[in-house]
Every structure is written in C-alpha cells, then in structure tokens.
Amino acid sequence: MKKLLILMILSIAFYACEPQKSDTEPVDETLSIENEFNMIRDSLLSENAKAMVLINEIDDSISAAAPMPETDPELDRGRKIFVKIDQLKNMLEDANKKIKVYESKIRKYKSENTDFSKRVETLETMIREKDEIIQKQELRISKLETELQMTREELSSANEQIVQITDRADQLQVKANTAYYVFGTKDELEEKGIIIIEGETLGLFGGKWIPNPEADQTLFTKIDIVKDVSLDFPNGWVIDEIVSAHERRLLELEPPGAGSAKLTIYDPEVFWKNDKRLIIIIEEE
Image (cartoon, rainbow, N blue to C red):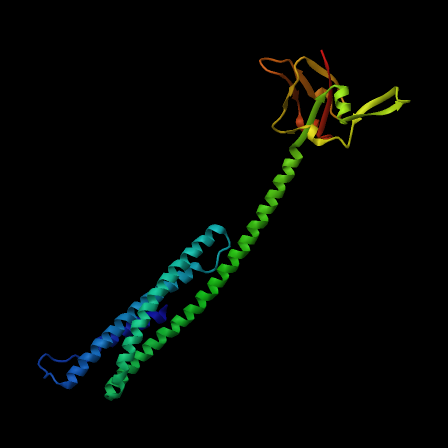
C-alpha cells in the first residue's frame, strides 16, 4: 500500500517538475515536439494514476476476503467480494491497454535527445513497478480463488453429509413412531392368518391365541404412535381379548357419540414399547 502511494506521489511530482515553456518563447519545431511529448506524457500519467487507484481498491478487497471464511453466509460475502474484484480487474485491464498505447508512443522520444531519454526512462520505471504490483496481486487473487473453491466444495460435501444424516435420522424416527393395529373376530383374524393357536391338545383342548409372525402387514392399519392416540372402534362391539403384548390397562373404550366409538391409548410410549402390532379380538356387546 505504501508503495502505491509513493508511485502516485511520484506521478504528481513528475508532472509538477516538468519544465514549463514561457508564453513569449518562440514557437519552433523543438517546442512542438515538447508539447507533443507533454500531451502523451500527461495522458500516460493520468491513466497510470487511475490504474493505481484501482490497484488500491483491489488490494482493499483482497484484504477483506482473506482469510477465507468457512461458514455459508461468509462464503456468500466472499463470492460477492470476488465479483467486485473481477469488475475492478476489468477496469484495470482497460487502463493498462491505454497505458501501453501511450508508452509505445512516448518511446520514440528516447532517441530525440538525452533529456527526453531520461524522462522516458523515469516513466518506464514507474510503469514497470506498477506492473510488478499487479503481478503480485494476481498471485494473491489466484490463491484466494483456489481457497474459495476448495472451501465451497468442502462446505457442499459437509452439507450433503448433514442432509444424509438428517434424512436418515428422520427415517429412523418415522420408523420408531410407526405402529400397526387390527380389530376382528377370532374367526376373521384366524382366517386371514393374523392369529394362530398355540398349545392346543389334540386340536380341541387348551391352547391360546398368539400373533402370527408371518401375518400379512397390509391387513393392518398403519398409524403414528405420537399423533394417533385415539383409534376408531366398531360401534356395538367390545374388546374380547388382546392377542398382542400390550397392556389392557392403558386402553379405554369410549362409547360412540355422534360418530364411531373410540379406543384411547394412554401413555403411548409405554404401550407400544414391546410390540408395534396391536391385535384385538372383538365381540358383539
């Protein structure tokens, strides 16, 4: 930054120290050449001053962008800064093109005389130092752009992992909250293969009804145990037996009002803890 300020000061000093011609001095060929030189020199210095202002602005933007942040909002800010840097670089490129044109024109005066030669060399030194600063800036910008790209890719990868983990967690939560129930008479449930008899003697005596582990899941009604704590129950029917491993004390059959009867589940977490398939044998009142 100090170097840039020195360059700007040198530009102004160079212009101020130029020999001024008297209004009364005769107009001759030498004066014409001098005036032509001064016009080109002034244009070159003007464009060089503009270039240095742009270089300063780019330098400030680079400082604002570094170090490269890692959070998403800060990355957005970093990308906006690089948009500004690109705009400044385009303006600087235009200024440099004009400088090159004036520089090419003014070089022809180096062979005119020693005075011109020294003045042209001073201008060339000033321009060369400016170009060196630009080259260093380009390296810094390239490094920051690489870091930005890497950070963006890393952040994108991390976000994808977070989404996958979140989706997986949601799936597990949905699975944990999913349960099934079915109501029916003994004959209906047995015919559908939902319940089977266990421990029956000679096919006639003893035994008890148990859930069939191979029962068709599509015969059950799917529910969310958190949201669905009140189940529709057939009017005119009562609970005969709970075949699944659920505590009857946590169930209450409410008589029908305007609609169907309701089977209310108290403490769903405890009720569904050991078995996610509720099987109830019903009978008429």
